[in-house]
Length: 190
Image (cartoon, rainbow, N blue to C red; front, side, top):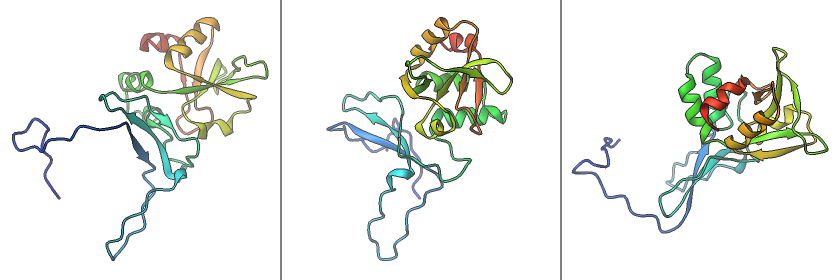
């Protein structure tokens, strides 16, 4: 195994510039490729094992994480995206608000809507009215909704300003389900 050397190290190798946009994929940690004894190329993960990814652009910019709608978690404890992972850590007391806020700002969401395309408001497990929000398509099957509206953090902030007295219920029914107070979303800044 080679030793890690920071990029600014004198003997670090030059990283070639990208000639085109490329996806950086996050694969379910429970997926393992079939091993080959004859040196054959290891197969790529099947689509349902790819959690999602980030588009790394030729200019060096990186997109928000895009969850894979075909992803099927290999186990109940497999996170569906980076924010779901942080929500689970938060629920166990292993992540703090600053960590949650950092990942929240870079996440993509979907808001449950009714047949009129209005956001659904339902009680949280502690009986507080909440907008139902998911961080990945895998969480949607636990919510009875007519549809889903994509949303960025700033969109969630606008919705909370339109719906007085509600919080966000992130990933309802999941191991990382979390009620995020409207004031906390405002503090994060959407």
